[in-house]
Image (cartoon, rainbow, N blue to C red; front, side, top):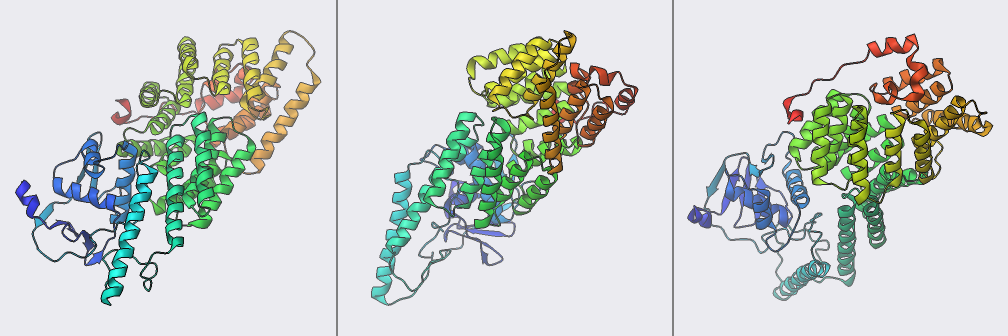
Length: 564
């Protein structure tokens, strides 16, 4: 076997001709330019075919002197697929075997055809967008400077011999120049610095913690400062602002910053899947679900296997109540990236909405084994326990998380408040919601703020005390703000649900029913947030509500993949 590979000069992979002697990949005589890491990855897969290579084996072969993570390998596979025109959802060339590794799908034929190699065998100048985050900046700069020095040296030899030749797969920016200018070197260094800072930011962003998200924003801003036309940094900055607003109690201004930076990314690269992903996410956090889906699909048209776009689409379909469609995409995503904690958490949320509680708990807990400090997963697991009326389990979970997670106190307090609220302990719930609302920067439309005020009024009624007129005025102001958001295009069912809860607490059951119906039409699945909520007690006694409950779907069946 070793002798065969020593003599092999090219591998025929379906319609691809991988010439390892010349360092060249062609399809029907047309050269496919590959960055060095993508080329090394393809050679490794070709040499092992038809056998499968594990992730560890591939990382050792392609990055022999560097320590990288699984995500770097996945991104390199994605880039190679893109170069080959391969589709991860229906692959022609590269198969990902869940939990095991990768292999080539076509039969690979080895040939020995001796030819004179070209002067440059690899496209070393091609842009590798996903180098190791742990790699040294000095080492990267030195390798680039060495390459530029080599080009200058070759140029000098060419001028001395009066010969003209161009190496394969290398594009010369100025064919008439035989030297590298200081400006070209400076641009290369700036690009390297911007990419380095961008990749550091991406690493922090994907930890999904508040403090890390703030660090990511700082890195992305520094990358933009190095290179103000670097589209990926704007897209990533947009994503970080969206995450800050959506998950970490951000401010309204963060929503606008997310939209602005996404458009800035697209202004520098209108074929950027990352740009459309960022814009689709920014639209989502603004509540514009239809615009978000349309924009995310534009990103998929550019990169059909972009995992984060698929995750966002599945999440939004779930929120719109299209649970079967969401579950389909969850399955596709987890088969393609079986160790993605965020995808697992979203899968659990959809399964909970489908009333598949055991399966939901399985995926929440599996997500936590991969990323135990991701508080949003713990929050949803606690909400699942509340949904099942297991308030002790919910309390134990939050108490355990609180010991190790001192951030996101608003979310922890709101979860504690929910535990009290759904048990009917209104006084303690009101106090906890009030504390959470204070940390929410006094957003009048936040759930914590709304429930704190409504419970204050409800407790006063029970105690036959006079209701503070300022509370009534606040409720009316909140109603106006919530309706204004809907008039601005916000399609999220949560707004309608809050309006229904306000009107129910005020005893205006016709209006409460109108907004509850709207919430259901927007995708809300009737659950404990209405069926067990004290502020909906009066509405649940209405005949029209009882007719509504009879129309609700039972648990949606799921296949065995989700019942592992």
